[in-house]
Image (spheres, rainbow, N blue to C red):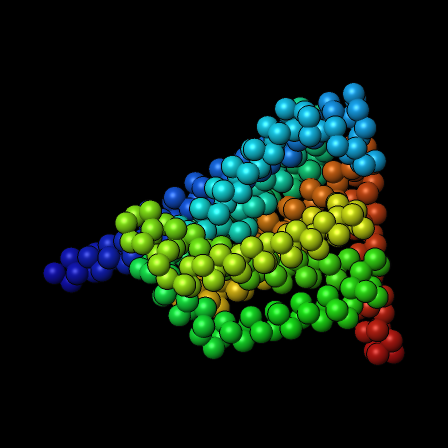
Length: 353
């Protein structure tokens, strides 16, 4: 009897472990599929649009010098339509899955564009670029396997209640205050010299836009399922916030891209935007309340792995050869080691003497 009860307990414990670590709700699976589809469409759109720009530039004035001949190029419009489809899929993904699952998967679009650029545009993907892709895939898989289940929400009024809780209101006030300080105090003085000013505005506002997008997506999902949410003023208020936040993001992101190197802007923006979005989701939707510490730490490790892969992809994408790639990587390691020696080892040695 004792053996039977022990085996039953072990079976029960095993079942709960499996459910905790590998079970995904139907909504999470839908959100995952939509997020992956979004990455495929958006990653592909970059390549299709670039081929369209090249084709248009060969017969007219290039976009880089102020030309608009690409507007008459069907291939460019095909890329634009592909990007719109990807953004719609991304919007829908937030209605089904938590932001901590959907947002980091945006890094997969970088992999898609890097691989397709190697195949279609002959832009060589070097060994460290391949390693970056592998790191992004490993990190994304880790997050998917340990992501929290989507919170059950029955009306947009419930989302509004979550958004008006003291913790999230405090976060929103800090974000808005920091945004206004950056826009009116620091951008006029440092916008052209400090990359973090523009990216800071985009990332701060972006975290609020994702929460509003998720709220609006939930409202539309419930409406399409037969529970009309368009009669609630909160739905329209969330829609207004979405438009205002996205316009602000686009404005300052375009300024950042126009002022600084894209290879620098993209990884820093991805890091800040994703980090703040996860923080906002944890505060508003309390994602981590439904998880144990092991799952949370594993998710953070997966996120750091994605960040490492993203930085590696952007750091090595312009290297001309395998030898140059190795040389650049070696120089980066040597500089890091030198700085560690200057700031850590030298002071310790002086103190000991």
